[in-house]
Length: 390
Picture 1 (cartoon, helix red, strand yellow):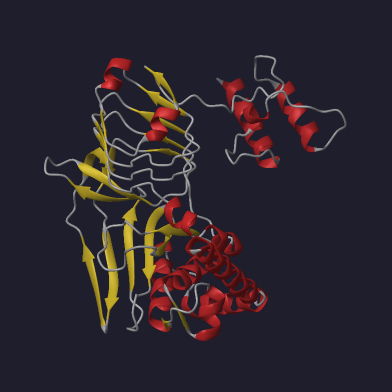
Picture 2 (tube, helix red, strand yellow):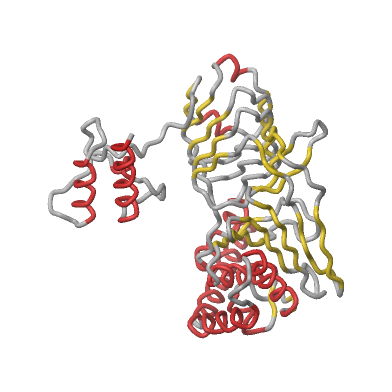
């Protein structure tokens, strides 16, 4: 009986959330005009990308009050307030409209300092080649607070280890194929914020170029929050960046707790230097099919693997691998080589020429988005030209 009541309540909640989302998005056209008006009032043509990120985040944090009743940018514009989801939605829309790259970031396990916690969302932004995490919103009736974290040229929050190396704590990039670098420049890890009536800035002591030896707890997790609210996010059409392949450098010795928790990861390269995999590091990675390990099977068996990593057992382990094998070989006709014939065949397929069939469509997915379109054709042509020039 209890389960049935719970199910009915959940169904009612989803229906209500969907209705709220649909009603809110009915005003999209007028909202888009209002978004542009906001940008025109706070941005100037001579601003740098960094200045635009600050201007947008400060505007949202200082203009709108906290309101737990709304989670979308439409709501916050219409009602003068919203929660951290609504504030993030507004920041993402403004940043994208201003020509930057912005997406939603699950900050449930991010290191603070203040705006973090269960089901907290913030924005990750790429502007002028620099990465930022922009946060706004509180969990009470106080004024909106905001933080802007400057990550620099590497999309990671970092933490210094006792031995002088660093841990990559939070990934805030946009790549589907992620290659974690051996070293990260820790010179720019700064933030600026308001708390109450005060505005303050902080810059971490310059670390310089440091070796990355650990992948921090929850560093690449992104799906937990999305899965808990799947129906709602489907209505909102919010996009959480999900790496599909990750290559770890030969300097990594430890992968922290929940590092890839419920990630969309399909392939990962692990170095022979790896000694420890934390609890739930690969929990429920349903799409993980291949592990490319640079060491031997004996070395793999010596790794300390904590509980909650069943996804590792379900994947195929390729021992003494040099790199992740790519499926996008270009050989869509399956004749064993990548040539002009493959480009012609893909072009015909895209034009829906009758009786055109691809022997291996995945070989042509150069854009790595799980589908074939004109972008793949352009990248295929470029790859073929590069091959001819070698």
